Structure formats: C-alpha cells, structure tokens
Image 1 (cartoon, helix red, strand yellow):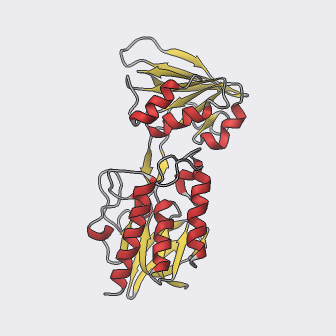
Image 2 (image 1 turned 120 degrees about the vertical axis):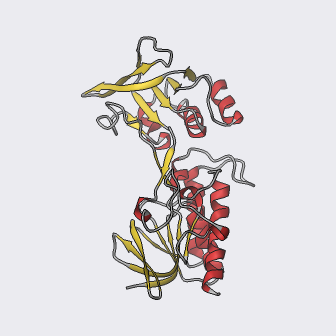
Length: 304
C-alpha cells in the first residue's frame, strides 16, 4: 500500500494551498481529487477578490494553484476518497483507486451545490437545468433564462449570463438579495438582468425540447405565475462534502467538520481546511489560508 507523509483530500484552493505548503515543508504529499483542480471556483467566470489580481477566471486561477503545487513536487491522483481509518502507525485513506497510507491527512473536500428539489429539476438536468453558467451559457445565446438564488454566486452568474442570453430573470424568495452590496449592485445595474423578487420556484416546466418555463409561487399566498424561459440556472447554496467521514470525525449540525487549534479535527493526525470545515467565511482567500495553516499544523504534528 503506497504511503505518504501527507495526503490531501480535495484540489480546491484549500487543498492546493496545503499541497504547496506541505511540499515547502518537505513532506511527501499526495492530492486526491475526483474532479479537476480548482474546486468550485473553476466554474466561476471571474474571480475579483483574489488579492493582487483584479480579475481572473476561476479556471485559470485553479490551474495556477495546481501548477504551483505540481512544480514543487506534489503528486496527484484522480480518485474519490471513500473513508478514513486509523492504523497502528498512522491513517488509511480508502479511495476508489485503492487504499493509501498516510502519516497525516488534510480533508479539503469543499462543498457541493444544493438542489432545489422541485418537480422537473432532475428530469431536465442537462436539458435546460444547469448549475454552471460558465459551462452552459453559450447554449442559451439569444434566449431568455432564469437564475435562481440570492447570494453572491447567483448575482455574479446572472451578470455573466447576460453576455449571452436575451434576458436573465434573477429569482429570489426574499424581497432583496443577500449577496454583497457590490455584487447586488452590479446585478441590479445590468441592463440584461431583471429582478424577480419575493418568488419561489415550485416547478420547472418543459417537454421533449427541454425547459420551457417555471411555475413561481408567492409568499403572500397569491396565485402561482408562469415564467417562460429556456433555461434555469440554480445557485442556492451548498452542503459540505463530509459524508465519507461521518462517524469517524466530529461534524456539526450542518455536516461541517469541527476543527480546533491549528485546524485539527477530532482524530489525531487529521486536519480540515476550507469550506468543508466549521468556518464563517467561504472565500478563495480564506480557503487558501486554511490550507496553509493545516499543512503547517500537519508538519508540526509529524515532527513532534
């Protein structure tokens, strides 16, 4: 069974920053990632809050993180982590590609996008229902689409979609967006974006050709409305990808890994970084900082 000083689960900003700092500390480092590098930022059209870089695509930023870690000698394996176990001399990572041994592990698996859970969502996934504007916006050139959500991602992706779509309806269940003031202002000022506030999506409508509209409900109990659109882009938050460590590590009520000093998890030699842990801010810069802290904590743990 291959053995490493440090195995990092996840190749988002937290995991890749941990790989950089792990290698700089001289640790034999392996990064497991079931998808491409960058985590969720790779699906972001433009990152505007990475210090020193006014604007960069999420894909390019993720690739630069990976190149930095690889240049320092970090190894990468495309595989999904299925579980962790303690052994007499360290830890075992159960992975789809086979078991791996580690002296320390950093869990940086991030989050996955939440689903609406309404009729039509699963049926029309990939046929008008999307969770990635960067991936699918060109397919809706000249058409009317909806973005569902009120946070940072929803506001930013609505502005991005307006470059392609004839009209973007930004639908949120409250009477104002919960995105940052800057992101909300950009969405409100975008000529191609129309706000549809105090509405909930009750059903995604469609047929053989894909999505044809949304059935919207009103919090005040008024009659439902139908909004004709060709696409529905859903950005309503995320849930931590921590199920594979449930029962092994302590999780909070939201499923986030509980961390203590140095981002240590509840088992010796295990640390957590980024959005998967109990943090109150989920930004690229804080995830990268988590990765650096966790890697240095792992080094201290391994060196007594």
